[in-house]
Image (tube, rainbow, N blue to C red; front, side, top):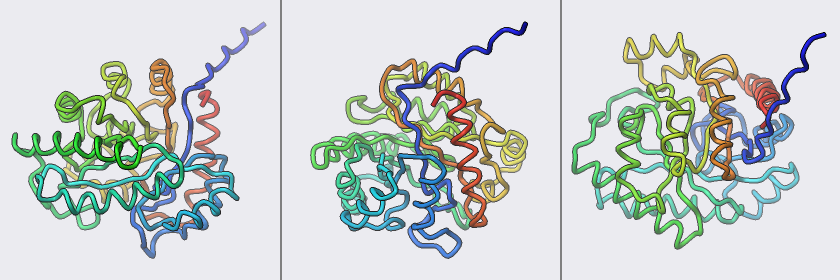
Length: 306
């Protein structure tokens, strides 16, 4: 007789979803991207119930129309996404707030509770041109931390949303050192983290260690893996993030790193409800590529207990 397989523990605090990013969508309007109707049809058919809004303007921005479109597909919005350059100081606040207000208004209208905040790139994500130095000065770090705290406070007061800051390749909040510096400089009541497992691995970080060390700061998850062989070449040759994605550095689970089972188990131990949104960066990609990957990824996550 063979021993019965151990049951997979239920990850009952983890709510799995997906995002336009997993359909190759990086921009509000781009001829290389699938139409938004196809994304909504396919994300629902693949078995997901939660979605993010993606880049503002990709999905309909009229709340009534968007509500109708997602409701008839049995979808619910988990978050909106905003981009910021708050390290540049108070002079960028007004332009930042104009963008944030648009996204936050739609996010609130969809009854979502989170805004995912992505710091601006120091390298252009299309051309790979270096826009500014990859390291911040001490003054820029102060601008970044105080600006994010102000953003967290005002977004909560005006829209009832919580911000979760997304460490990201080719930004100033990327790997272990800079993430720790950012978290240590900000108020946990105002600013928490969207841990993207793929970006954190891309930048040399350990997601399980981060969850175990800064568990109270983990407010949201993006599930993603990197291909270690491609990543090694990317790091060795200093390849920018956009071209690295075109090479397939972000890969389909469970083919890459980090292993998602230990990450999900560590997140479950936090004993708080967390969204875990699948994102597989693959801009640009053939229009028929995302759906089968999304289906397989959803099956894999179910096998993990999610």
